[in-house]
Image (tube, helix red, strand yellow):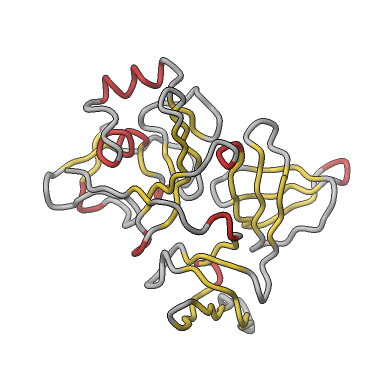
Length: 238
């Protein structure tokens, strides 16, 4: 199986230039589906911390790079929305956050914020013992005892023990960020949820500092004020 991916066909969320060269690194199977960008692209082309796959492997083997608190990661591990990157030797921590246009960018955070990550609840199911399984946007599944959560809500999950440490309901008044569509990267408050009869997607109206926009609710994720601000680190793969 090839380890290369044609640049012209990579997802729009990948922070790479598409016309400078023919190929880039192909993501391994894992979380985030096809939207996951290989870790080496962030290390080499966005941050400039390594120059080659060999250097990336060495840094990872030394345990100097953690993804969501885990040091056992490969250089082609898919990285996606709201993942946490920690660089132990540099004492640097980043959250992967959707930037303008939906491209993934790195927002610098403090060490405390790097101990947990945000997840959007895609759906939930009842499991044995009366517990509820929450299925998150990145494929992670969380077991909870109570049933106060709904699809569309967001939770913050501890990297150490996968415990839920915060819950942000999806409702009018919620702070959200658009992660897809023409308004990707915009942040605002939900002012109206428009329910579509039948099987069609519901729409949501979001008020921002510059006006308002309407999009399908699958394109927004509930956040809180702690996710707003910080210096985004973007970059192009050249």
